[in-house]
Image (cartoon, rainbow, N blue to C red; front, side, top):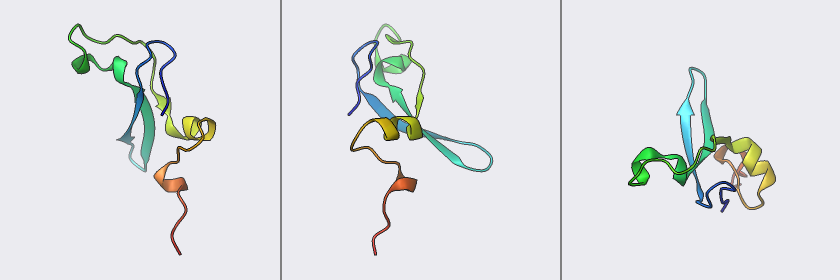
Length: 69
């Protein structure tokens, strides 16, 4: 689990679609308006999953997971 350096909340994985592919990224829980009563508490931007997965041990993207034989 990764924690935000700005507010201390954890990150969660989500995705968006482009015309050709699905892009995975992580968002800080504190950056969502609807989660906190007074609105967002964090200004950090989302982080692309491929950047964070390469940095944080134990996290992998579905497209990087080994295929069972």
